[in-house]
Image 1 (cartoon, rainbow, N blue to C red):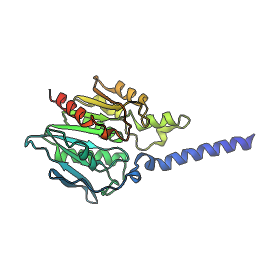
Image 2: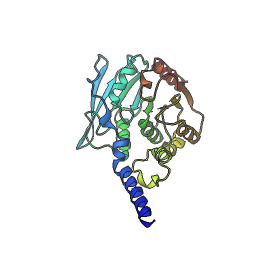
Image 3: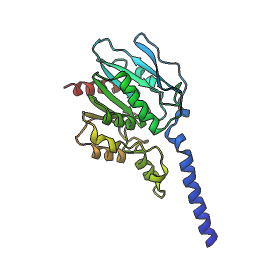
Image 4: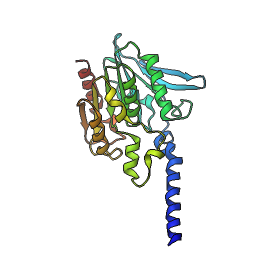
Length: 260
């Protein structure tokens, strides 16, 4: 009996160790990104941002035809080459679009972490967005980055695409027998930041999202001081939502509502 108990303890501790030491690979899945040519076009301009003396981030600017256009700052998902977002918003009007790859993603240098993502988001905003009409947008993992940034800087709207409440909450739901709060180093707790966002918020969800169960969206909605604008996409998935035929049109409607 003692040997059985010892075996269970060893397995339990081993499983905790596995979760702890593999969490970066699970949260920051840059290795899953399919290599594609960099987006190109007359209105596209590559960007490079030195976030510190050793790290340069790879980014892109999609320039709008209007000289007084607003700015949409986009933060991608955990397996997302964020620079390709501009290809999904070609028809968007009235906004320049800027997207940077996280550290360790694409050609961006450095090592990914929650602390680095948050610090870089502030640097991106302070470099490109100060004094402008700016909307902050985050997809999946990036919704946590966007929520943080929107709570720290002046903005005209926050768009959360396939968002979640926190990485801790998602992991605890998936692994209920483990002390997840002590194991997870990169918590991305959007529920902590949304109460401090002083702008309109929009949520764009996928029906029957198989990656982020709706439980986590509901917990996120509970943390919001006001009811957000809400768009729900059918006949698509968490990973394919950007290619939904109505995606850009629905985003344009949200931006129009932010301006009212």
